[in-house]
Length: 115
Image (tube, rainbow, N blue to C red; front, side, top):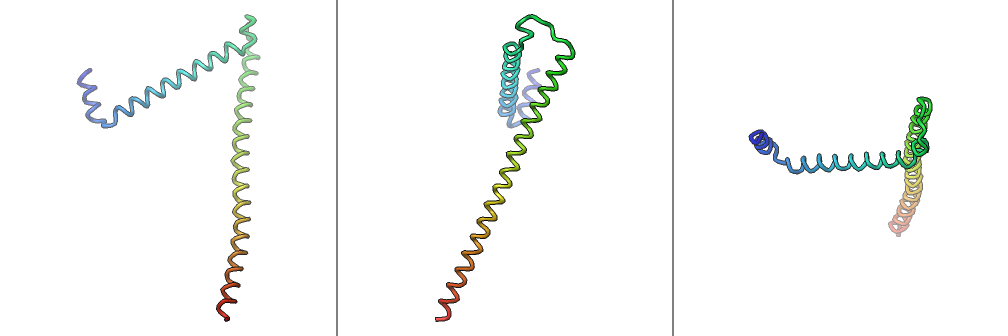
């Protein structure tokens, strides 16, 4: 085992970083799992009352979660779309202003060169 570990350390120069990232990911996943378990315990009225859920209720909850996830995704897409539209409006405004200022410069240069 020691020989295999030593060989891995020799072949992988950034083994410390890889191990740290793997450990960090594992800890993050454990925290997320704990948060999910806590959320389930606290918010599940059926669990609090000691009532067993039927298959139909579990399917309904699953559909609800999927609908909420889709709504979050749609909201993110709408926000991204709005950001693109706003940036295009800014480009159009700056484009028109830039064109106007270019025309003013050319007229000033024309007046200055005719003297």
